[in-house]
Length: 431
Image (cartoon, rainbow, N blue to C red; front, side, top):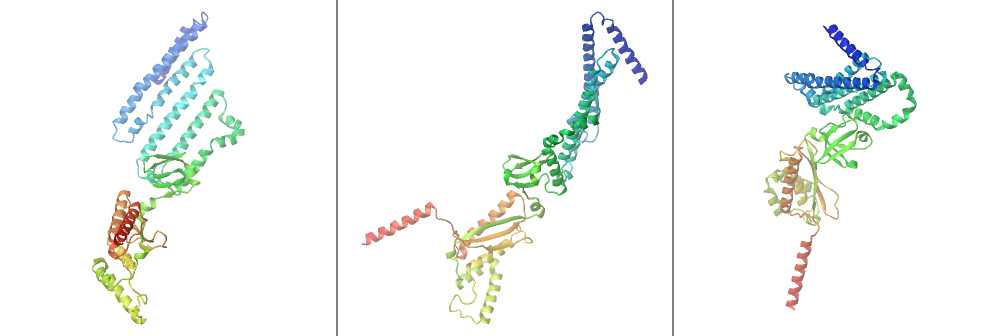
């Protein structure tokens, strides 16, 4: 059947050639004009037939399958470039049948066929990458950079083969002739080589994944990684702007990855309040009685009083002087309260670093730092937990006879001036 079709096409081509050849002696221009028009019409018809019928039949058959991944072949238009092969085949075949047809024109068909195939492979790789990106492993092993390298090699290879076909040379001879341009080519593809090596290191060492929260201050990047490609890494910042960073820069500059925080399930709270140092004092019995009424402190105060009484008795301390021996302070009791308060909150991780500590005093007061980990790593929930803690801390600090230090504001200075003016006025009236 195929042999008969080929024979029929050959006879048809020979017949057309003989029909047109009779005009060659009369008018060569008319002859070649007619050949050109007929070739263009036949090539266009073959393209429209392939694109309008065969490609549509392929798409229709793909839509009828139960698989969802093959729908990407339609979405990425994988088979559309292959419709260019039909006019190339027709042009090459018809040209070989026409007597005296220039061979240089026939060689022009090969580059078009090569790039049609490469375009189809390009779209096939894009469809395969999209299928891969829908799998959970894609976040751990992003492949876009490697796919881009394969595409780049495909187009370079296609370009070399196309040029060799036009020049009628062997690809190996062509490559050997450009050996002197190696340094120049390395300079052109410097970023490509560096980015490719950096991409391998990022993936193999698991430095970064799609979805990770990273910070890279030099590039003002602070957000979630949305794409790891061959040349660039895209980061969507928390203000919804996009920062694009060259891939190889991650091997040259330091960056912070917050993935460990998410995996651990705890997010650090590290914040201080500043205590007015003049408000720190020893506890008297009235204060101790008041503190004992706080439920979270009852066991602490009983144990602490027993410990201090035992120490002072053993060392025969003279308690007539307040600085002798060991005594409870309102600041120490407040620290103990904060420890018990935080341990009672289910939102705080007790199995991670847990500190309520004093830091070195300064001109702004005595820093009392809370260093714990919240059990919820989501930003909004974490901020709510932290705010609730310090709302409570600031509200109850006065119950322990302590004052929070803050620099005087204009309102404070105005109130002070008003009191001084009132005092001066009372003294003047008295005189």
